[in-house]
Length: 254
Image (tube, rainbow, N blue to C red; front, top):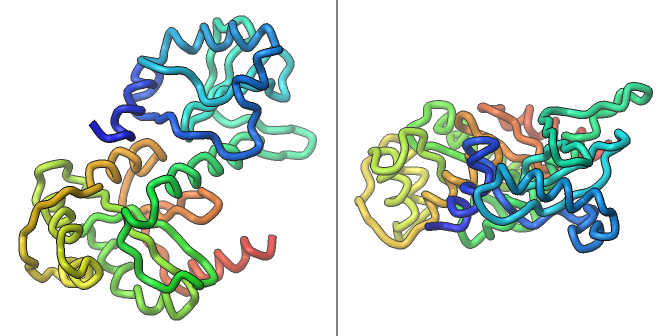
Protein backbone atom coordinates (compact mmCIF):
# COMPACT_ATOMS: atom_id res chain seq x y z
CA UNK A 1 0.00 0.00 0.00
CA UNK A 2 1.54 3.35 -0.99
CA UNK A 3 1.92 6.14 1.53
CA UNK A 4 -0.95 8.26 0.19
CA UNK A 5 -3.43 5.39 0.10
CA UNK A 6 -2.49 4.33 3.61
CA UNK A 7 -2.89 7.85 4.94
CA UNK A 8 -6.16 8.38 3.12
CA UNK A 9 -7.75 5.66 5.21
CA UNK A 10 -7.34 7.83 8.29
CA UNK A 11 -10.23 10.08 7.36
CA UNK A 12 -12.57 7.45 6.01
CA UNK A 13 -15.10 8.38 8.66
CA UNK A 14 -15.16 12.08 7.71
CA UNK A 15 -14.59 12.15 3.96
CA UNK A 16 -13.81 9.52 1.40
CA UNK A 17 -10.43 11.10 0.76
CA UNK A 18 -8.01 13.02 2.96
CA UNK A 19 -4.43 12.53 4.05
CA UNK A 20 -1.93 12.94 6.80
CA UNK A 21 1.04 14.90 5.51
CA UNK A 22 3.47 16.88 7.66
CA UNK A 23 2.07 20.35 8.20
CA UNK A 24 3.37 23.43 6.46
CA UNK A 25 5.54 25.65 8.65
CA UNK A 26 3.79 28.13 10.88
CA UNK A 27 1.29 25.79 12.54
CA UNK A 28 1.26 24.92 16.21
CA UNK A 29 2.31 21.30 16.66
CA UNK A 30 0.44 18.91 18.91
CA UNK A 31 3.35 18.90 21.32
CA UNK A 32 3.32 22.69 21.55
CA UNK A 33 -0.43 22.75 22.05
CA UNK A 34 -0.41 20.10 24.78
CA UNK A 35 -0.49 22.75 27.50
CA UNK A 36 -4.04 23.63 26.46
CA UNK A 37 -6.38 21.14 28.21
CA UNK A 38 -9.01 21.50 25.47
CA UNK A 39 -6.62 20.04 22.92
CA UNK A 40 -6.95 16.58 24.43
CA UNK A 41 -10.75 16.76 24.22
CA UNK A 42 -10.57 17.91 20.59
CA UNK A 43 -8.13 15.13 19.77
CA UNK A 44 -10.33 12.56 21.48
CA UNK A 45 -13.38 13.75 19.57
CA UNK A 46 -11.64 13.67 16.19
CA UNK A 47 -10.15 10.23 16.96
CA UNK A 48 -13.68 8.82 16.85
CA UNK A 49 -13.80 9.68 13.13
CA UNK A 50 -10.24 8.94 12.06
CA UNK A 51 -9.54 5.35 11.09
CA UNK A 52 -5.96 5.45 12.35
CA UNK A 53 -3.45 7.95 13.67
CA UNK A 54 -4.22 11.48 14.80
CA UNK A 55 -4.33 15.06 13.47
CA UNK A 56 -1.21 16.85 12.35
CA UNK A 57 -2.16 20.05 14.16
CA UNK A 58 -4.69 21.34 16.65
CA UNK A 59 -4.75 25.02 17.49
CA UNK A 60 -7.25 27.67 18.60
CA UNK A 61 -9.23 29.28 15.80
CA UNK A 62 -10.24 32.96 15.81
CA UNK A 63 -13.63 31.84 17.19
CA UNK A 64 -13.62 31.37 20.94
CA UNK A 65 -14.21 27.73 21.88
CA UNK A 66 -13.48 26.42 18.37
CA UNK A 67 -10.22 24.78 17.27
CA UNK A 68 -8.59 24.39 13.87
CA UNK A 69 -7.70 20.78 13.15
CA UNK A 70 -5.43 20.03 10.22
CA UNK A 71 -5.30 16.52 8.79
CA UNK A 72 -3.09 16.58 5.75
CA UNK A 73 -4.42 19.18 3.30
CA UNK A 74 -7.82 19.24 4.98
CA UNK A 75 -8.96 21.66 7.69
CA UNK A 76 -11.79 21.09 10.13
CA UNK A 77 -13.22 23.22 12.92
CA UNK A 78 -13.97 21.36 16.15
CA UNK A 79 -15.65 22.56 19.35
CA UNK A 80 -13.41 22.62 22.43
CA UNK A 81 -15.39 19.81 24.03
CA UNK A 82 -14.70 17.59 20.99
CA UNK A 83 -18.40 17.03 20.33
CA UNK A 84 -18.95 19.04 17.14
CA UNK A 85 -17.08 19.24 13.85
CA UNK A 86 -17.60 21.72 11.03
CA UNK A 87 -16.15 21.98 7.56
CA UNK A 88 -15.95 24.94 5.19
CA UNK A 89 -14.31 28.34 5.04
CA UNK A 90 -14.01 30.78 7.91
CA UNK A 91 -14.14 34.50 7.09
CA UNK A 92 -13.24 37.57 9.10
CA UNK A 93 -16.27 39.78 8.51
CA UNK A 94 -14.52 43.08 9.26
CA UNK A 95 -11.61 42.47 6.89
CA UNK A 96 -13.55 40.14 4.55
CA UNK A 97 -10.52 37.84 4.71
CA UNK A 98 -10.73 34.14 4.00
CA UNK A 99 -8.95 32.59 7.00
CA UNK A 100 -9.06 29.01 5.73
CA UNK A 101 -7.94 28.79 2.12
CA UNK A 102 -4.38 30.04 2.51
CA UNK A 103 -3.62 27.49 5.23
CA UNK A 104 -5.13 24.65 3.23
CA UNK A 105 -3.21 25.77 0.12
CA UNK A 106 0.08 25.71 2.01
CA UNK A 107 -0.63 22.15 3.11
CA UNK A 108 -1.48 21.16 -0.47
CA UNK A 109 1.72 22.74 -1.78
CA UNK A 110 3.76 20.80 0.74
CA UNK A 111 1.96 17.57 -0.11
CA UNK A 112 2.89 18.02 -3.78
CA UNK A 113 6.48 18.95 -2.94
CA UNK A 114 6.79 15.85 -0.78
CA UNK A 115 6.30 13.72 -3.90
CA UNK A 116 9.83 14.66 -4.98
CA UNK A 117 10.78 15.79 -8.46
CA UNK A 118 12.41 12.43 -9.10
CA UNK A 119 8.86 11.08 -9.17
CA UNK A 120 7.57 13.57 -11.75
CA UNK A 121 7.96 14.06 -15.49
CA UNK A 122 9.33 17.57 -15.88
CA UNK A 123 9.47 19.92 -18.87
CA UNK A 124 11.56 23.07 -18.45
CA UNK A 125 14.82 24.12 -16.79
CA UNK A 126 15.28 24.34 -13.03
CA UNK A 127 16.01 28.07 -13.22
CA UNK A 128 12.60 28.89 -14.72
CA UNK A 129 10.75 31.86 -13.20
CA UNK A 130 7.78 29.73 -12.24
CA UNK A 131 7.11 26.05 -11.57
CA UNK A 132 3.66 24.52 -11.76
CA UNK A 133 2.56 20.96 -11.05
CA UNK A 134 -0.08 19.43 -13.31
CA UNK A 135 -2.18 16.34 -12.68
CA UNK A 136 -2.63 14.96 -16.17
CA UNK A 137 -4.44 12.21 -18.08
CA UNK A 138 -2.79 11.19 -21.32
CA UNK A 139 -6.17 10.63 -23.01
CA UNK A 140 -7.72 13.89 -21.79
CA UNK A 141 -8.31 16.32 -24.66
CA UNK A 142 -7.51 19.46 -22.72
CA UNK A 143 -4.43 17.79 -21.20
CA UNK A 144 -3.23 17.23 -24.74
CA UNK A 145 -4.04 20.80 -25.65
CA UNK A 146 -1.96 22.03 -22.72
CA UNK A 147 0.93 19.79 -23.69
CA UNK A 148 0.80 21.05 -27.27
CA UNK A 149 1.82 24.39 -25.76
CA UNK A 150 4.59 22.99 -23.57
CA UNK A 151 7.31 24.85 -25.45
CA UNK A 152 5.32 28.06 -25.14
CA UNK A 153 5.02 27.49 -21.40
CA UNK A 154 8.76 26.98 -21.17
CA UNK A 155 9.50 30.03 -23.34
CA UNK A 156 7.39 32.10 -20.92
CA UNK A 157 9.49 30.88 -18.02
CA UNK A 158 7.03 28.27 -16.77
CA UNK A 159 8.38 24.87 -15.79
CA UNK A 160 5.79 22.08 -15.90
CA UNK A 161 5.94 19.11 -13.55
CA UNK A 162 3.55 16.31 -14.47
CA UNK A 163 1.85 13.93 -12.08
CA UNK A 164 -0.24 11.12 -13.54
CA UNK A 165 -3.99 11.10 -12.98
CA UNK A 166 -5.67 8.66 -15.40
CA UNK A 167 -9.32 9.35 -14.67
CA UNK A 168 -10.54 5.95 -15.86
CA UNK A 169 -8.71 4.32 -12.98
CA UNK A 170 -6.24 1.55 -12.35
CA UNK A 171 -6.12 -1.06 -15.10
CA UNK A 172 -7.67 1.21 -17.75
CA UNK A 173 -5.94 1.90 -21.08
CA UNK A 174 -5.15 5.41 -19.83
CA UNK A 175 -3.53 3.98 -16.71
CA UNK A 176 -1.47 1.55 -18.80
CA UNK A 177 -0.31 4.42 -21.01
CA UNK A 178 0.75 6.42 -17.96
CA UNK A 179 2.75 3.45 -16.68
CA UNK A 180 4.34 2.97 -20.08
CA UNK A 181 5.35 6.63 -20.21
CA UNK A 182 6.94 6.35 -16.79
CA UNK A 183 8.78 3.16 -17.68
CA UNK A 184 10.05 4.48 -21.03
CA UNK A 185 13.73 5.11 -21.57
CA UNK A 186 12.91 8.74 -22.36
CA UNK A 187 9.84 9.74 -20.34
CA UNK A 188 9.53 13.21 -21.86
CA UNK A 189 9.58 11.87 -25.40
CA UNK A 190 7.15 9.11 -24.47
CA UNK A 191 4.82 11.65 -22.85
CA UNK A 192 4.86 13.86 -25.93
CA UNK A 193 4.29 10.97 -28.33
CA UNK A 194 1.53 9.46 -26.23
CA UNK A 195 -0.28 12.78 -25.86
CA UNK A 196 -0.07 13.20 -29.61
CA UNK A 197 -2.02 9.97 -29.96
CA UNK A 198 0.97 7.91 -31.00
CA UNK A 199 1.40 4.35 -29.81
CA UNK A 200 4.40 3.86 -27.56
CA UNK A 201 5.95 0.63 -26.39
CA UNK A 202 3.91 -0.86 -23.56
CA UNK A 203 6.09 -1.33 -20.52
CA UNK A 204 5.72 -2.04 -16.84
CA UNK A 205 8.06 -1.27 -13.99
CA UNK A 206 7.98 0.10 -10.48
CA UNK A 207 6.16 3.40 -10.85
CA UNK A 208 4.41 6.19 -8.88
CA UNK A 209 1.24 6.37 -10.99
CA UNK A 210 -1.14 4.97 -8.37
CA UNK A 211 0.54 7.15 -5.74
CA UNK A 212 -0.03 10.21 -7.94
CA UNK A 213 -3.71 9.28 -8.29
CA UNK A 214 -4.18 8.91 -4.55
CA UNK A 215 -2.45 12.23 -3.95
CA UNK A 216 -4.66 13.89 -6.55
CA UNK A 217 -7.76 12.71 -4.73
CA UNK A 218 -6.35 13.92 -1.44
CA UNK A 219 -5.76 17.45 -2.67
CA UNK A 220 -9.12 17.66 -4.40
CA UNK A 221 -8.47 16.92 -8.08
CA UNK A 222 -11.84 16.43 -9.76
CA UNK A 223 -10.82 16.65 -13.40
CA UNK A 224 -7.80 17.06 -15.62
CA UNK A 225 -5.72 18.96 -16.21
CA UNK A 226 -5.50 20.24 -12.64
CA UNK A 227 -2.83 22.88 -12.24
CA UNK A 228 -1.29 23.38 -8.82
CA UNK A 229 0.41 26.75 -8.43
CA UNK A 230 3.49 27.23 -6.22
CA UNK A 231 1.21 28.59 -3.50
CA UNK A 232 -0.82 25.38 -3.48
CA UNK A 233 -3.80 27.05 -5.11
CA UNK A 234 -5.38 24.71 -7.64
CA UNK A 235 -6.64 25.83 -11.03
CA UNK A 236 -9.06 23.28 -12.52
CA UNK A 237 -8.92 22.84 -16.26
CA UNK A 238 -6.83 24.09 -19.15
CA UNK A 239 -5.35 27.59 -19.23
CA UNK A 240 -3.49 28.96 -22.29
CA UNK A 241 0.18 29.60 -21.66
CA UNK A 242 -0.05 33.43 -21.94
CA UNK A 243 -2.99 33.58 -19.54
CA UNK A 244 -1.27 31.36 -16.98
CA UNK A 245 1.91 33.41 -17.31
CA UNK A 246 -0.03 36.60 -16.60
CA UNK A 247 -1.69 34.96 -13.62
CA UNK A 248 1.64 33.82 -12.18
CA UNK A 249 3.24 37.21 -12.73
CA UNK A 250 0.29 38.89 -11.05
CA UNK A 251 0.54 36.66 -8.00
CA UNK A 252 4.28 37.26 -7.85
CA UNK A 253 3.72 41.01 -7.49
CA UNK A 254 1.03 40.68 -4.81
